[in-house]
Amino acid sequence: MSDPKFIVLGSNSFSGATFCDYLAEQGYDVVATSRSAEPADPMLPYKWQDRPGKVRFEKVDINHDLDALEALLKREKFTHVVNFAAQSMVGQSWDHPDDWMMTNVVSTVRLHVLLRGLDFLDRYVHVTTPEVFGSTDGWVREDAPFNPSTPYAVSRAAGDMSLKTFIDTYDMPAVMTRAANVYGPGQQLYRIIPRTILSAIGGAKLRLDGGGKSVRVFIHMRDVSDATLKVALKGEPGSCYHISGYDVVSIRDLVERILDQLGKDFDECVEVGPDRPGKDQAYLLDSFKIRTELGWQDKISLDEGLADCIAWARRFESSIPELPATYVHKP
Image 1 (cartoon, one colour):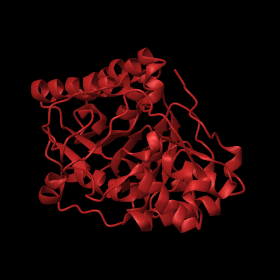
Image 2 (cartoon, one colour):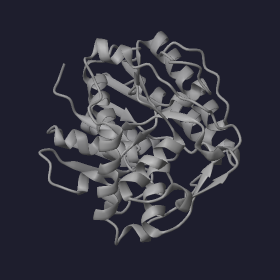
Image 3 (cartoon, rainbow, N blue to C red):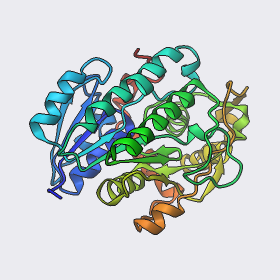
């Protein structure tokens, strides 16, 4: 196998940008691609400090620029393609479900057709989501049946199932990952952790859907990046790996932990609203497989990670108000 040469699709996403930074920290030069121009520096961890490796950005949209992507792949002969590109908002997928289907199914399948013909490809990492399982009961392993409950989840399940046919039929060197509720510095401002921090710092009320009863396992994106790299380098082709910790918290408890670190009172900072349609009450992924096969383990506790996010918010406090505070849909 040749020395790994990485291209990351969807690099403007929080997860993609953090993974690019992690690769650079490990000494890899990486090409980062996304459909929009790079966002502001507070959202791009690979611009916060010098790293041994370099990140080079190329503007490529898998919905419209597949020929350009093909030319880039063949010109530079990337051995490892890691795909974070997706329409990923759950609630908004009800408003434009066809856009979610276009990106997460049609364009993703077209990408897989392209990748299956590359003889220099050592590994394709398809980053997907636990939402394909719907609301889970207990700890769920990789072979659990799909039970999607939103247009977003349906679109990701369809893309995952299609990829499996490519793996089974063409021996495509692909692996899948699913991570439960990633977070960390540079996450989009409308996500629950940065939204809570910024609301508390700015003195605004945080709206908490359903009172925060649903439970999650939150995992720092640096731990996820470490796992993703292990999967890219050593994962068994055709396998799926769950990336998760085991510290289960309710959304309310999460918000309380953040407010405690900021010295704020819950009742003064939070107002309770109704649950959004189709919201799943639990995602509990069993990560036994990646821990035993690849020797991965999460290292950053939730409280340490929340402190990391608060430090990021303080560092970029002057520029964050200029950034989008709500999701902006791009068809």
